[in-house]
Image (cartoon, rainbow, N blue to C red):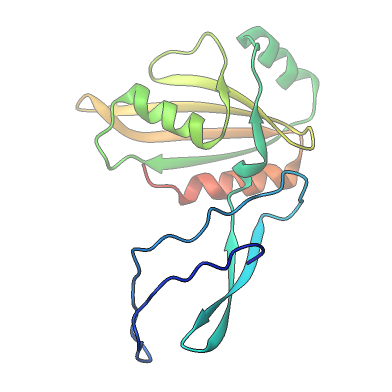
Length: 174
């Protein structure tokens, strides 16, 4: 990978069909905000063989928080523009408190919460580095006092970005 030449030991021999795990660290990797690709490509040198690898970063890497918005401003935005919208439900299996579960999703989306939310629901705002606007409506359902599911409704001014973001949301574990 560009600029990375660290060695990580996986042992002397890895048999076919087996896996070996290393607790070593490679990186840090740098991501150029000016790059349009969310893929980091490179190769690993394993037992004298060069093995190509590809790491796909989440689309949220291209987002920055938008601050200073109110619920009224967001409602005005959503009614005055054409927004692509996609939804997902995320199961919460870790027994998190409702507010913490909501906060984790907002952090993953690299968004700032719009004033006026509550413990169980909120509106989050961010934008892509290219300027596409992103709004996320997050609602956490409780069961026995802890979060059980999170419904995320992502709205974007860029349809491709919206699909990528909701795909990323569907892959996370909370």
